[in-house]
Length: 130
Image 1 (cartoon, rainbow, N blue to C red):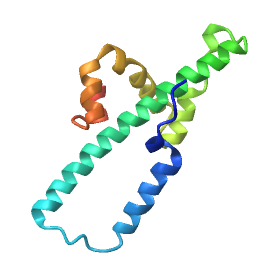
Image 2: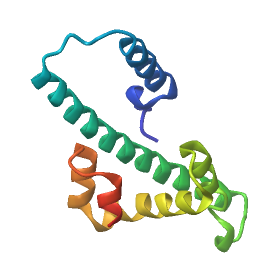
Image 3: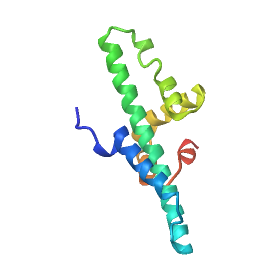
């Protein structure tokens, strides 16, 4: 098993969120050009964040399936409940959670260039879906 990624721990992500929340309490002092550049950089970050969610969803699915296999669960029942967990975590409907998990499982292997663009923040999750 690979070592945990320190930047993707819940604590690390929350720390960044807290820092940004505090930064929103006062004017940025940026020029208009810098504001536009920051908006673009944030949009790319959002795209990369959804790719990170997909990567974590894929890992959760694989881990759950391994645990289910070790416990003797029939193959047809392995992975049950993962999409519901993803839906709850992402605050979306169970149907959408299922679609997001499917996307997370397919894109890295079957669409590697799309996966690279998504991870780089070049395309949105919606465009990946299309």
